[in-house]
Image 1 (cartoon, rainbow, N blue to C red):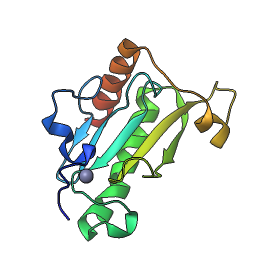
Image 2: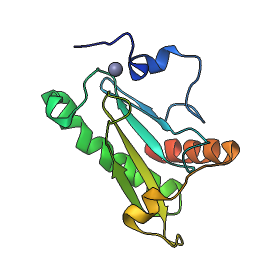
Image 3: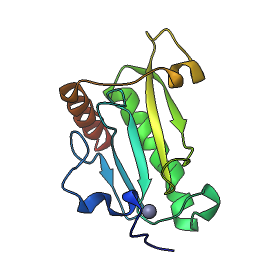
Image 4: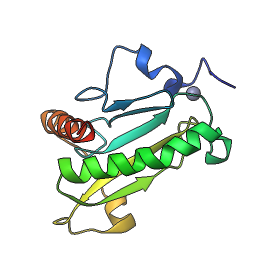
Length: 142
Ligand SMILES: [Zn+2]
């Protein structure tokens, strides 16, 4: 199962809509970009697999070997490019059944923690989201 014609995440790069601020990272296994302004905070990143699969158990050896180092690099860049004290990782794959994981930067000043923080409504000003995406990408390239 390498591609699913009806899967919205199998053709992310072929659409005309790049993520806000442009792609933050692309390699042979992963695409990383800022989430939509109407549902995510500035700096919230979605990691999507290039290959169509759903669960962690279906990762190839190369995908699983690259996922951890990618998380380390993104965590470092997000903490440098935002005011995140902690970066939360969430991956349910219940709505879109193509592997993806979200990283949410939780500022030290935020009143909520853990799942209470994750359950709170998110949105962002598109200009803020673009600026934050660029800052994270700049730190990722250092
Ligand atoms: Zn897919």
